Length: 252
Length: 272
Ligand SMILES: Nc1ncnc2c1ncn2[C@@H]1O[C@H](COP(=O)(O)OP(=O)(O)O)[C@@H](O)[C@H]1O
Ligand SMILES: [Mg+2]
Image (cartoon, rainbow over all chains, first blue to last red):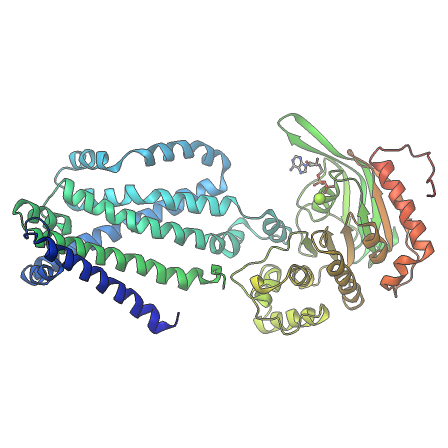
């Protein structure tokens, strides 16, 4: 597909999707309180545009902060696990167990422990939900380093740090970005989970919740669309970073 | 032993090696002694698992022997040293670097002050020797197995090591590519100076490339047999089909079977 096609085709697909949606609502004569149609969304966005900007920013920065923590802690823990077999074997069961806990149950617990500290507990949930894939990818990337690399460099007297910077780290980047694509989506879910389950007057989740309370269905749908856009934007930022730093891993 | 006193001769003297395993010490080498004169080419053959790779790791200083001495250029090996180059069966490449970037990797460690331009120049020189001129900026993923192995040889030699260690470098290649690589190895040897220790399980390869073939016994390995290959320096693949070489190969095969313990050392080769 050429460049133009890659832009035009998805847009056409979205337009077709919106058309079908509009048509289904129109054919069934559904009122707004049952199902909003795409043509209701524009006015909803316009009416609440300041709230969308303000709450959208809340959601965005808290997601990014949570993801940032995941990257830092995930990489550090992943590195330790990648280099030390003992730590790896000791931590894996713990991490898997923690990851298995449905995060919806963690949300009220965290909200209770950090009561009133809305930003902190939202960031924390975004972090907790998204760091697992990063730990796994980094530790696997490092522990599967071919022994030949290590032998070639070590026989020349290279230090562990040199081996890490020259080989282990760049070699892990494709896996790392693969995990980051999952993590960014998870962090985003985490933020919204906190905003909706424990509403505290911030974020798009709160706007969604107030739409629910006031039975403003077009607003709820508008929030869903806004969230989708934010999620897509975050995802594609990671894709661009991936192509910049690990584009070599793509096979033609 | 005078030849091992300078340059890059290799000597192993009464080397015994045990690996520590959960089931206790595991002996791999038993009083193993061998000498490679400066500039010579030695092939080491033996049953699989007998300790050939262990010998290479001892020579390169990645392992310390339980007892005995290892000397490179007359001085005792106590740890890794930059005058060794290595290539393995698996020609690992840094996929995010081009061919030149992969070849100059050792220089980034042992010749930090060398200007980048000189490094690239050196890489080009080697690429020409292995008939890969024009591939400087190709990605490893664009190369065939044989080409990757050529690049791996360039990387092993880029820092002008005194000792070249090849651990079954052609083992995974098809027969024709392998023969091409033998010829590449031959031309490298003419232009570059090194003492080579080649591990192989291909007896024809050992005979074609080396000055001496050493047969190791099964584990714990000793030096079981050693023979000089008298084929001169100008060898062609045709030589491998001469009567003398055929007899030599049969003799070596017999030695391998003795090493494997399939037949006693006193039994004779039976002509078929
Ligand atoms: N680090 C190690 N720890 C324990 N055993 C080892 C280790 N490295 C090699 N071995 C064992 O030592 C023996 C010789 O290995 P190696 O030198 O690789 O044989 P080969 O002749 O096939 O190259 C094998 O049985 C192998 O399993
Ligand atoms: Mg081996």
